[in-house]
Image (spheres, rainbow, N blue to C red):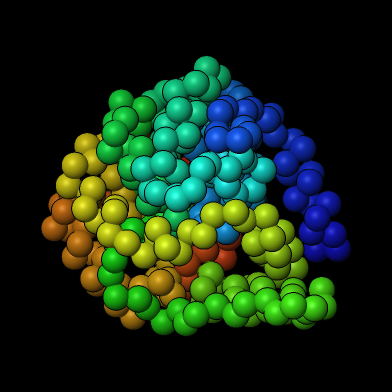
Length: 281
């Protein structure tokens, strides 16, 4: 891709923008495709933005009403007062869903990583807003960590090329199973999203808030992972068992040969799965 920034701007520019309250500013929502009979709402992961779904939104908007937000303190959305908490971060999401008159409700939510944990708490408190919830590579389970090691940190005076290289390596550690799938667009998004992040999501993500909430989330639930999700692999069975115990009715989905950021790394398989579950809904 010759110009990842231009591509990101073009996809964003084809969306309709909405704003709802969020601390010291708005919570930003984008919408692609307004003719679909069902609404799917995407909620991204930590150190991310709506662009965690950049390879999904326009493909799925051909058939559905597709929405994606920037979570509080991430992307273009406003900041919440510190100290941050799971419940506090989740509150503007619930308020936004309620306030968006153009958003057909109840929604089919698909949420990733840190965003999955937050959205689970929205569903816990406001189940009437949800037709279904799918959590992808979810945080908040407090399970033994997988193969992901600690990520590299930038150093003062680091050049732009060195910083991009650092972020590419971090993508290979945490987000992708196959390093040859880390393209210029993925690196561009990682660099931009990390620089804008104002919420230190790992502190909240590594707790057990979602694990404790699971038995009381009364909406149809799916839990999905890439087969080699670095946050859990090779201990994936711990997560499967947790969901079987806490929500025995939940569907379990595993995407073969992909890592944590499965919706980007294997977008065709992910988009086909979303379409299939939306048609069943």
